[in-house]
Amino acid sequence: MFAAREAWRAGLWAPKHWAGNIAAGMIVGVVALPLAMAFAIASGVKPEQGLYTAIVAGVVVSLFGGSRVQIAGPTGAFIVILSGIVAEHGVAGLQLATLMAGLMLCAFGLARLGGVIRYIPLPVILGFTAGIGIIIWVGQWQAFLGLPAVRGHFFHEKFWFLIQHLTQLDPVATAFGVGSLALVLLPRRVRILQRIPGPLLALVVATILQGIFQFPQLATIGSTFGDLPRGLPLPHWPGGGLDRIVPLIGPAFTIALLGAIESLLSAVVADSMAGTRHDSNAELFGQGLANVISPLFGGIAATGAIARTATNIRSGGYAPLAGVVHALVLALVLLAFAPLARNIPLATLAAILFVVAWNMSEAHRVVRLIRHAPRADAVILCLTLLLTVFADLVVAVNIGIVLSVLRFLHRMASSVVVTPVAIPESGPGKQHAGIRVLRVRGPLFFAAVETLREAFRTADAPTLILSLDQVPFADATALQALDDEIVAAHARGMRVILCGAEAPIRAKLSRMGTLSRLGADDFQQDLLKALAAAETTGH
Image (cartoon, rainbow, N blue to C red; front, side, top):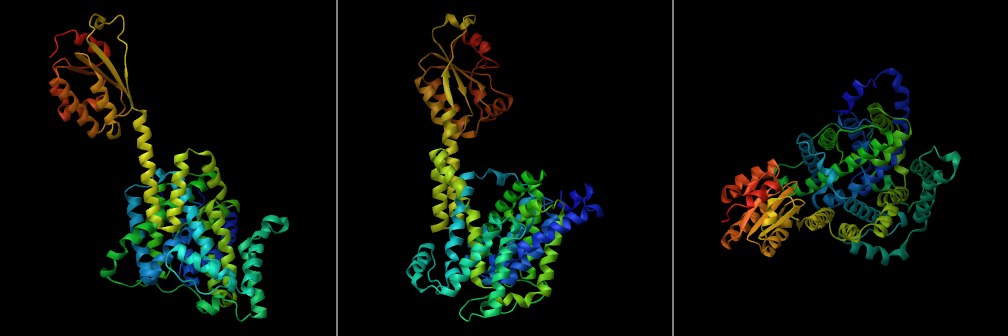
């Protein structure tokens, strides 16, 4: 159910709900202003493109997403991916990849894959978000310290270049960076300033100082990108034909995957704060629609923004109107105050991103998990983090998920046991010393095949009763292995009786031909009947 429709059914579009949501939307719009420009610049595009993205995505996701309090726009998580795409395919390539990612997200939502994203393990999520935080932090040293343009393609090359050139830092840029960082953090420490967004405070103060003193060596939006245009551009195709689509499939899927993860994580956080319940499939569709429309207006990739969504809720926003107002505030700023942006120092935006990177990394959660979680989970987190930083985000997530799945399979396989069962004294089988009863506990799947084979190899009785009453499910690999062991047992002169299988497993055994391979009385409903059948003549 789309957020706008849910809000309509709940009566949240009524005039009595306007005041609180309009106020919240204005606050979020003010908070989003510096972030949208900072994320755009760090992603390798112009600052106004971040504002275009926040405006378009803010409206679309608020109305057509799956959470009525979600605020969408450019986010820090995308910086690493988008800057890489811009470097390889240009801005037009990024916008085309964003549009393709939007179509993928719409398809995910229509295919009802929203629940699948929840299966990504926490160590993988913490690992790649912390890795992104580190990349963003190091990536902003150049602007924060006024260093020369960074050379190198890989993280370690850029990091080493920055270390080598630290002695060339610019005192003015560094002063603006340090001062801006202090102003960003100041409202957290001073009670009377707590209602003022730290990024906005730093942005206003730094811009005024640069406007007054006009430090010639200080890099600003105006000196680097020129003046911001007033208003949204007319919709247009981002550029490129069919020949560009194939090379962009991989980058587009990366954008779609990360966008899905981030938006649903943000929606979950919003639910816990606001007491709402989001529709994950509608959320994916809304995010997809936003990413289809955003590049048509010159924007870039967008997703749910956890910090801005939390600000919306804390400020009293509880309806899609707040998200729409936040977008209108940004549009008004673009129309009325665009010329003032030319004096915004890049060092100030870098300071804002320093704080974003720290918040993204969730260092306290990473340290706690490494110290207290099972060792395998800690290893997966660290490996995902290192691969994100030094290799590639997609590689990191894929390897992290694969290792988590393999660990889960190992633990599941270890939980499958085949145990001997004492023959009840009241059962007729007590008269037969040649009967061995085994019970399988746990799911019969491909990773547990060896446990099943070992049970057959060690069975030394003329008649083996295998109880499946504690097997919740079985896959084709395990059922084929069971069929093979029954054939081998028959060849050794051993009689095999199966019992207790649930109806779905019984149906699978029938389709595999296992039941027809058994004797007429060698499949029974329960253990007692199997013991009674064991008294009859064996094979």
